[in-house]
Image 1 (cartoon, one colour):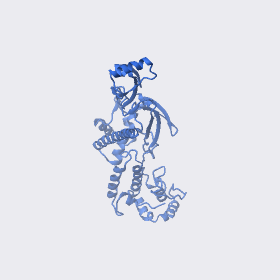
Image 2 (tube, each protein chain N blue to C red; image 1 turned 120 degrees about the horizontal axis):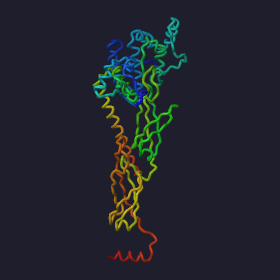
Image 3 (cartoon, chains in turn yellow, red; image 1 turned 180 degrees about the horizontal axis):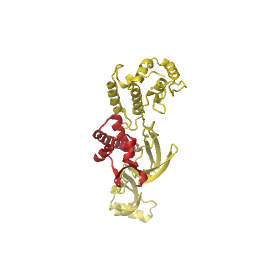
Length: 299
Length: 98
């Protein structure tokens, strides 16, 4: 385990006043507070470091002990034994697993092993309760494009808990939603973390999706393309009839307003459907048809 | 909304060591909505995470209500921009693939 320089963490001098400590803590806490840095693990860890430094340095008794023993951390064990022999309660980790901020995590109370080695359980710091927010939980939900065409509810299990969520129509592939308070429970009565769900959407349709718009290809025969007519197209909301203008060229694109994908969180609003006509040339022509076409080509 | 989805504002304030006027101020600023039933004020469970977050910013960081309101707006904008970036990235990916 490495020695942790709490003064360095707060960016203050060893002889900093209580006012300086408070000021430095508040400034850094505003910068790294988990509520202001959602989904940022680095900021969360940094915030725990700042809290721990403040926990020690803002309490004159703890600060005195830290100044006396902290630098030479190898004496912490003797210090701890002395504390215990003095009849004080300690929840020090006896495993001897020393870890510093750089490589180690925090215990369930959000404190480093260094802290616990120096001060035992967090209760030893005068009973002040530093509440920490629980960790955020990240999960992925696999859906098909047709699943997100309509708003629906879905139940899934995460960390052994069943969670029922409403998935709004129009969710995008890779989009993340946050469920406040559904992450890991808080520490010492702190608030629970948030649950982040990333949607992985696979396209199980013939349409290409670009935002709220859909793109499709419609095959039409040569005669409809030349003379005009109608063709039927399957959309996600049912079949539609398309009017084909006479002399429609191959690759002509037409827009059908409001037949695209639902707009996220805007009920009743839809993108557009773009249809590209693919003119199919006739096959297996009869002799008579060929003759007629030859006549046509001469005109 | 059933009664089970409501927490008395007084009870919430007591458990968070807050003056009840704090919640009234949040309501006046339009940051939260409370429900009144027979002259008793309640906070809905749905709003609880948001109210608790405001309380944390207020008590832990000493940010005043106007500041929290501004932060909330900025965080919403950050989230909207992150979603827009994602949308654009998806579009780019699609065009690169075509």
